[in-house]
Length: 232
Image 1 (cartoon, one colour):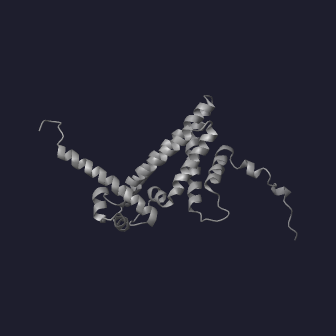
Image 2 (tube, rainbow, N blue to C red):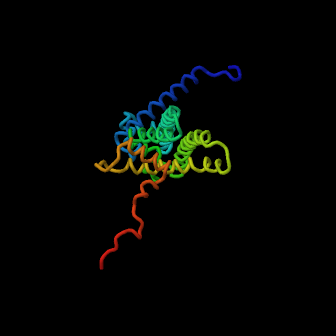
Image 3 (cartoon, rainbow, N blue to C red):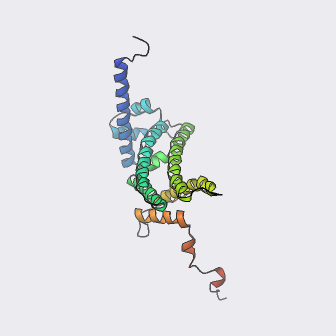
């Protein structure tokens, strides 16, 4: 065979493996959605109608499966958030659209979201604590870096150049992501109740915090000196 030529059988086998890997990722995602983020490899394999040895063959361990599912899920979230941001007319509308898209996708399957964004060391079925942490952190780092850039671009265009502007643009998007993620995950984990905000209301609340802080909510609160004194 000439140098550089690809054996047709090897090519077909590689294509088969890639297709099978996509099928397993899809099946694992469905299983986690139904069973929960702490589903074991054995549970996931049973739901997929195969053995866990097949998953180990394709992904190495549970950490590898988390990384593979995470790459797919986070890529989809990134595209959805980007589409939402591009349709916005102002930076504030863009923030609301991105926060809303993020919450919508996370709420669609909290189990899958938790599976790809959280790593619990010491998996009983072969997960590697260090490898899992690195793999999961790597996928998340790429995802949040891309979202940070999406936030920074309209801000840079809106604020323009000037003293101190670049420092704001450099720090604020990352800080905003921390607020969105922490508030969003706490909201997801909160049990349903009459007091729990709906998805759109939560997205608007987070957007207001990002744009105005909590100062408007504190404006009408009395100062300590204005509070009535307790009688003794």
